[in-house]
Length: 398
Ligand SMILES: *Cc1c(COP(=O)(O)O)cnc(C)c1O
Image (cartoon, rainbow, N blue to C red; front, side):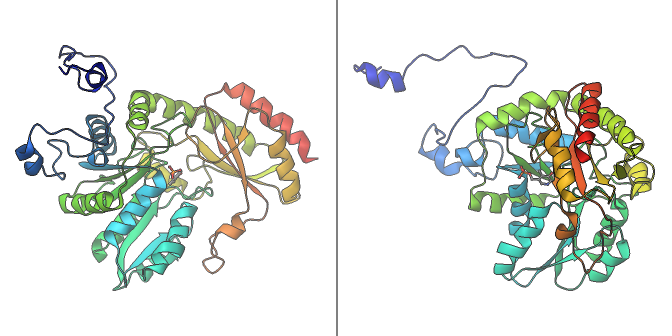
């Protein structure tokens, strides 16, 4: 004890008794981590998760979340990053260098393509888009420069479900790393590290912002691997770029994680009910939901996710082409329970109208539909209320 109370406020001798336990883990907040002595400080290797070095390299709170996400995805190592997009960037920066090429599905999460077109291009890393629904197209585009292939199931917004095991097998046989954006599957719909017949992706990235958070209030991403060397490369870039996460955010995800499978199932059931209802509406030309008969790639969803019978609470509809984009905007504006907003996986239902033609490569011709597309993220409201909201808003199309 010092003789000045202000110093005691910082260096107080009292320590609470050890052995506290509760359902929810404690939150450890730190930039600075204290070492017992200089020898301990010098002996510490930040790469080993058997101790602590600095807040950016992990705390008990973030280590705990990393282990749980690795288990969820069926992986071994997990690195937490400040957003799902940062997870994509961490993978690209760790595995690509000037002169390399990365292949990205034409229907990938848009900002993944924007990163390739921006920073990666400026660093001398080229990219090609491929048609994820045509494995032969991927096969044909893999060349000597190809070092990484992105996979996504289903495609962003247009919801086509690719033959993921086949695309992954093509990468493996070509000796190219396969990284999956597994945000939709969330580690629940299928196991990215066991796609059947010994096929596994090398890396799974997950926007924890979506279902693991479940609240629409946290931004976080994860990079999961099984391979020790790959994990080390990811971790080195993670450290050099400074991609740590905040303890309060990690705690929010830890708190939501135990209920995730129940929420995912509830979002799924409600989404399928509303998708079927919309399919029968005269205003709607097509419903794009991988678990629905007639959706593109439905049989691939069935093969991969049929045993679990799980899909995220996300689908799109294409309005009949007799409705203009402005009329479809009026439909979206007339909704009251569905809010206009990006992202998904939270309790509140969301809607976004998209101009798909502008988002897809004309050269690949992966999108030929006429009519405006609207993407729905189904929340946890009563389905009857959501259906009534949709039905009322249909009146605004007239
Ligand atoms: C939301 C999302 C991301 C990015 O996550 P953020 O945390 O918003 O950066 C990446 N991929 C997919 C498929 C997503 O839905």
